[in-house]
Image 1 (cartoon, one colour):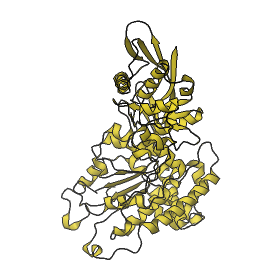
Image 2 (spheres, one colour; image 1 turned 90 degrees about the horizontal axis):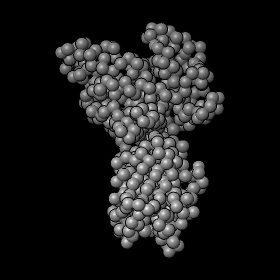
Image 3 (tube, helix red, strand yellow; image 1 turned 135 degrees about the vertical axis):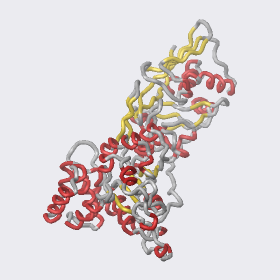
Image 4 (tube, helix red, strand yellow; image 1 turned 60 degrees about the horizontal axis):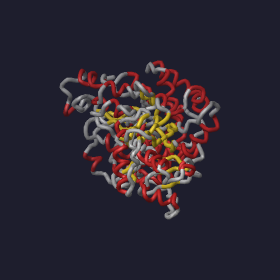
Amino acid sequence: MVARVNTVAFQGIEVLDIDVQVQLSGGAVAFNVVGLPDKAVGESRERVRSAFQALGLSLPAKRITVNMAPADVQKEGSHYDLPIALGLLVAMGILPGEEIAGYTALGELALDGSLTAVAGVLPAAIGAVSHKRGLICPAACGSEAAWAADLEVLAPPTLLALINHFKGTQVLAQPKPHMEEVAPGMRDLRDVKGQETAKRALEVAAAGNHNLLMVGPPGSGKSMLASCLPGILPPLDPTEALEVSMIHSVAGLLQGGRLLRNRQFREPHQGTSLPALVGGSSKAKPGEISLAHNGVLFLDELPEFPRQVLEALRQPLETGRVTVARANVHVTYPARFQLVAAMNPCRCGFLDDPSRACAQAPKCAVQYQSKISGPMFDRIDCHVDVPPVSAADLSLPPPAEGSAEVAARVAAARATQSVRLKEAHTGHGQAPRTNAEADGDLLERIAAPDQPGRKLLTEAAERMRLSARGYHRVLRVARTLADLEDSTGVRRHHVAEALSYRRVSPSR
């Protein structure tokens, strides 16, 4: 007799069906796990054996063979403990195989028989729904699995509780889904003194999901402005929340199984490695750019990041996804993030300050800014100078307008974009959600400026030597500026303001 239990393997946020087959046979006593397991899967033998002993069960004195099919797919992680244990319980006649076959199971066993949280429960639950199965997972992951619609979820705290459920001596209640609470302590734009131009650029970037680069001396408030961005962004809609939560589930970062509702603000350090930023390592886990999907990736001191790390952002910025290639697997993760970066004008930071003039100007600025390639600069929609804040500005009372007022305008602009883009979208797949995602023919149809605006854009593109990418990015920003004014068309002054965001500094 061969007992079978359904479980999953992960390739990015996609799930692959895995058939765990357990056989008890005669011969030398052994416990073998085959089917391309990694070290964590191989060690499940000891965890299962100890969990059985905690329940007062002993493994039969037979040859135990566990095969995980298909055998040519790498099996990674500790979530195979529970399927193996269930297979053994079915093979020993303790649990009914027909009922277990109606579920997908995943979970890690502790030595005392309790079930420990594992990564990837949300995509596993969605996969179980597609196969019309229920899901068995640890109690700590129950609320995460409950977000999948029309799914029976068994979330026992221990292996004993699960056995009692199938024996009819204990009933496991259906877990309830939980949502992440509103992030507390977000900075308010009312705390920012001065910097009206930078605050305007921040609002424009938030409204259209545009990439933003702030250039200014140390202490001018670049990082503070960036930290205010989450407070003016709208919350995730249900589709976006599910996408982001699936990525965080695979990464094992969902706290308490709560679905995410706030846009992520990821702030990696300058020493972040290439695999940590774009995804990778031996298990091809999602990186910072995927964890920032539908949110913000803030890179402070942009030129201090390694050149190869910055260049790796170019393709995800265009396509909204990243492919991690390994010898045995190619994994694609969503990576539609909003890049916000900050940098000094030169290494010392005081290039344009006459009282603290840079001794090596302009060579210092040219060398410092050249660490960022032209194509990378070209992919940033809005460039804004952030001058130093004077003592007079710091002594002023807080501004009357804060994040709440700006957030209302941003939400209205994004709602307008969403409706327009859905109506104008004629291709296959999902319609773009923001102006920053519009491209090609769609962009020309929704952002074509009036005749004076077209003339200004054409002349400026020739004088500024804008690339085709830069030309289209100006159009996107102009369309967002029009949306903030609730204007149906793109006018000349919208194009003029959008063009003002293309210049980095006179030294470049």
